Amino acid sequence: MVNEFKELLRKLKNKKIQAIIAESWSVSWPMALIMGFIFFIGLADVYVAGRFGKEVQAAYGVAFQLYFIFSIIANALTVGTVSVVSRLFTSHRKKEFNIAVDSSLLSAIVAGSAFGIAGVLSCGVIINLLGIPGVLKALSIPLVRIYSAGLLFNYLLISTNGVLRACKMIKKSLVTMAVVCVLNIVLNFTFAFHTPLRFQGIAVATLVSIFIGMLMNIAFAQKLLSPRITFSWETIKKIFNIGWPAGLLQILWQFGAMVLYLILARLPAHNVEIMAAFTNGLRIESAIFLPAFAFNLANAVVVGNLLGRGEQDDAYRGGMITAYMGFFTVTILTILVMLNAFTIASFLSDNPIVINECAKYIFISLIVEPLMAWGVILSGGLNGAGDTRSVMKIITLSVWCVRIPLSYLLALHFGFGAPAVWWSMNTSIIVQTFFVSRHYFRKGWLRRAEKVIVPFEVK
Image 1 (spheres, rainbow, N blue to C red):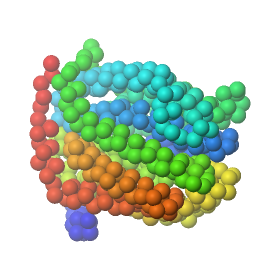
Image 2 (cartoon, rainbow, N blue to C red):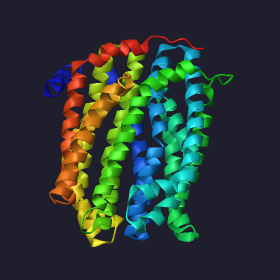
Image 3 (spheres, helix red, strand yellow):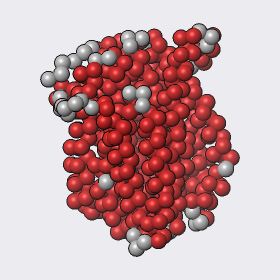
């Protein structure tokens, strides 16, 4: 990493390198703002939930994890869509490009409808199977049911956001997400405190705001569609082959997060408070993780666009440049959050146990946050090149062979409690970052990218 950085510094005066930096930044800063909007939405959710008590706050954490799991197919399809569409966009294969956009949005409609119906009908069964404390079950079920009813809107919002950033229209997504953010926060407080919905208003606010955002994005993306909407199995196969590892990774990642909740639920003392603290800590950490993820998504577009133009060396450099920008940004944010840990934790809860446990989580977990950002952003470049399988293998092994076993053994078997879970998470991030970096530097993914780029027949 150090040698690569020195090499980039020597080349900064090169106009081509400057052009790559400009291209990377043009995608990264709007994505960072979009993730900022998402952070403020989540912060408002947790704050409002906290006004109804620690039980509602913990139940919201469980419900939102399930909502994210239900949205995984949308995120997976979008990873594949961005990889394919970003290269078709810069290679000027217009017919294939239009059909790829058509097919991705039609797939989002089908998948979003199916998972939405399934979530509404089965949310009670799923919550009962999780084994969470009984006091949380009755609070979680209505939240999950409302979130599920809005899955179709969320699928289309995620998919259209992916298409827009792949086509260098990310500022359109920025406008949409700004509206979604403001609307969600205003409706959050309105529905929760001024209507009979009470805490369920958190989920209703999300449903309404993403519906408006979906309509805006569809209007923005309309000119990217074919004159006559066309669905291509060949295109979907290409998108699916790239996207399914990312989808499986997110499933395994989110189930890993659910397992951590279940481990915390089995702690002998203050388990509900610690679960609430974990929910709050994740939201606070997202102030840093979401910008890192913004650079991850931006890196996928940067690498994909450059590969579409056949510029492999620049694609490698572009991925590195984006990673360095994200690394330094996250380092600054990490310092700011750690210096204000107790203040932020106190804002989200008035329970002293929740506040103290949340502050512990922040101080421990944020130690490795810059390393996490580096690995996550390089993973975005690999996703843009279509090398999602390697990313899936590395992160899955770090979670299920390091994070989960260590958390169970140290927290429950040896009795070290919640801090042992936080340190286990740190250990898995170190392992993950090391192997992602090694894989990126070896450049094997560039050679494999050639096979993904070749034209495919549209039927």
